[in-house]
Amino acid sequence: MASNSIIRLPINKVDGFEITSADDALAIEEPLEIRLEYGPNNNRQVKNISVTMRTPGNDDELATGFLFTEGIIKSMGDVMGIGHTFIACAENKENVIQVSLNENATPHLQNTDRNFYTTSSCGVCGKGSINAIRTVSTFNTTDDINRINSEVLYHLPDVLRQHQTVFEDTGGIHASALFTNAGELLLVREDVGRHNALDKLIGAAITENWLPLNNHVLMLSGRASFELVQKAAMAGINIIAAVGAPSSLAVQLANEFNITLIGFLRGKRFNIYTAAHRILLPTYEITC
Amino acid sequence: MASNSIIRLPINKVDGFEITSADDALAIEEPLEIRLEYGPNNNRQVKNISVTMRTPGNDDELATGFLFTEGIIKSMGDVMGIGHTFIACAENKENVIQVSLNENATPHLQNTDRNFYTTSSCGVCGKGSINAIRTVSTFNTTDDINRINSEVLYHLPDVLRQHQTVFEDTGGIHASALFTNAGELLLVREDVGRHNALDKLIGAAITENWLPLNNHVLMLSGRASFELVQKAAMAGINIIAAVGAPSSLAVQLANEFNITLIGFLRGKRFNIYTAAHRILLPTYEITC
Image 1 (cartoon, rainbow over the protein chains, first blue to last red):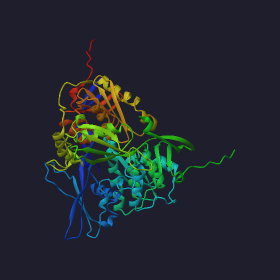
Image 2 (cartoon, each protein chain N blue to C red; image 1 turned 60 degrees about the vertical axis):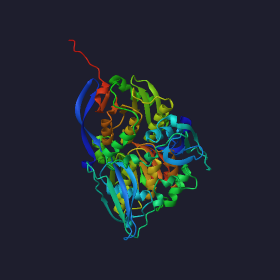
Image 3 (cartoon, chains in turn purple, green; image 1 turned 180 degrees about the vertical axis):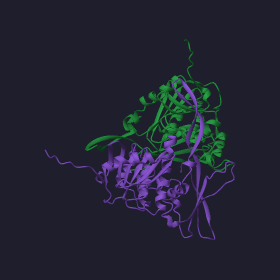
Image 4 (tube, each protein chain N blue to C red; image 1 turned 135 degrees about the vertical axis):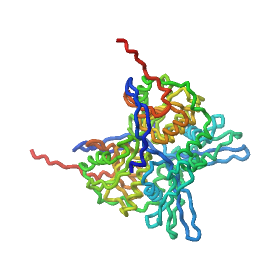
């Protein structure tokens, strides 16, 4: 992934009284337009769905994950093909990707334009946003089988960090990782946009036919926002662990969906915001 | 600001083998719909411009700053009034804000729908995005008067941190701050969304009639993305200092606009990515 995700530029480094020339690695940020082709064979249509500022790499997963987590497609069974569409451009970048649906697939285009926030009966309020997501979710996040041991949790940030290849070079990128509940790393995806990193991850999991991800743990390199918990809920994820803080609406959504939400996972410490029953803590018998 | 920006919730804290109940402060995240009212008095229209997930507080500045940095309004002279519009909602949140323009003001609505990325001749590529911004910018960022001493720069992150009231309590929020080039703090704004924090800051500066901000330094608590540099350019800002890393497109945009972009400002170290001539380093004569 790293090859087309990083650019090296000459910069000046200042350290106290010294200034030196150096090469610095930067995470690439470029726009990606996601197009959807759909309809009967005798009347195909193409619609521009979204433009997102992303780090190039895994664009097919990003497009798949975005369309799924926004509720526009229901599964890979809807998808006939995905490919970059080259545009006339001096830089000739691969900045348009088109997802072609089978002729029988019906995209749920009422879910575009961030209608999650506006179609609900309650207009724009946190509760309305949460109710709107409930209506488009495919998977149940309320099952009570998934468990993770706190000792397993402590290792996840280190494992994630070791596999953040672009972060290692640039210090400027978000990551999402998928682990089994035994702590085995399955996938890592990186992007300048945290929502893109998660869309890539979920897109990869869809391609592998792994959904629902209900025996897994989603690890986030930064903070947990409403949008990230919403995307996780769409994939059936019921344990989320973040290195940073959650927002109020992220906690509210996790609570309503019975998703275990962990924040500030650092060293041997973490906060459990919701659904604490999925965390197994070591028990010690006093034997004096 | 902190009073309606923070919520306290009961959580479980795990520290090694111990689990304890505690109250935790979370940054509030709620949707805000920005509406624009415009047109002649006998034919007023209302258009929904955007829904953003934001931390409540300074909503009027957020709306003003957003409309300005997106190129939809040109100055406060366009604005007749700003106010929350209450909606029928069980939670009765102040989540809709309406900006009313004078009847002679013409909003540039072709700039909505993120057309920055799509109206340029080059479609979606970094260069196209940059060219599109050039066409809507009001202020010149290429003047060569503004200077800042490196010794002044070193203090800015500490001063910002001391004034981040919501971060202090929650650890989960972004900040933007405006300093003079002598290091005097003028404004700090915080939000769960880094673009919102900057829109609030620029909105406040517009209200004070301070634009263009060309004798100032913009300090960012995190990374510098394309979107943040774009918003800064719209306000005439020509020195940006970030605690975190910039993206490739942020550097490209800063370079094209002759904006000084500093990253990784920590302790007495920083990287200068563009327009290094605005940074004054101490010179020492060897007098042995």
